[in-house]
Image (cartoon, rainbow, N blue to C red; front, side):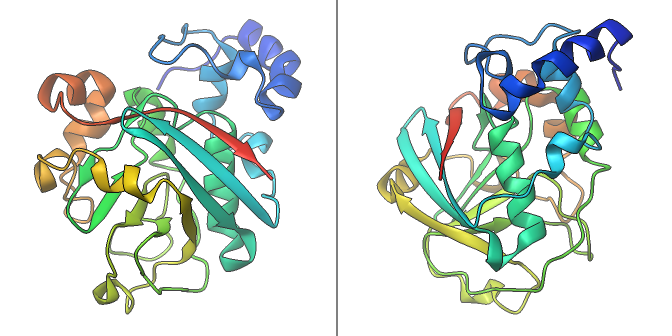
Length: 233
């Protein structure tokens, strides 16, 4: 895993106020590579940094600009505080910017694999304890996905495109709902189905995690992209 130089950490410390406010230093132009010593990349490579532990507001709205249009997730902290804080901070600090909606089927959408393999490697070890299940997987709800074992959530989020009652017996914690743009979610490219990102529980996502955007764009060029995420209270 790449580590930041001491100079980069000094720059990061100066940049944290801008990062916390969604400032320009945390949001390079969509698609632009992050310089190896950039403060934004240094933060993405350090899931243990205190910035990732900021409590989410009681209710917040996450606005996802995608290549198909914009949808908005309403995040409720009291539905699952640990998961809500994780999703809120991933959105706030730019983790989801310029990433791919990698698993899209008729019933579900997944995103949350970063474009940089080094970032995926860092967050693969940042597993999150489970919240109490709140598993009413109705159309438009969303939750953090996880492999088939406890306390293993990291960065991948799923949105239910249909009522998925079969998922209710599992320990998913629904964190909120789509409050605008469900028609955009419905239009996301679904032609690859399971081949472009299924197999999280079977350990089959290695090529995506290890190849990042370069692999996904080469192998699955029709996947829709998250351009940018912004937050409103």
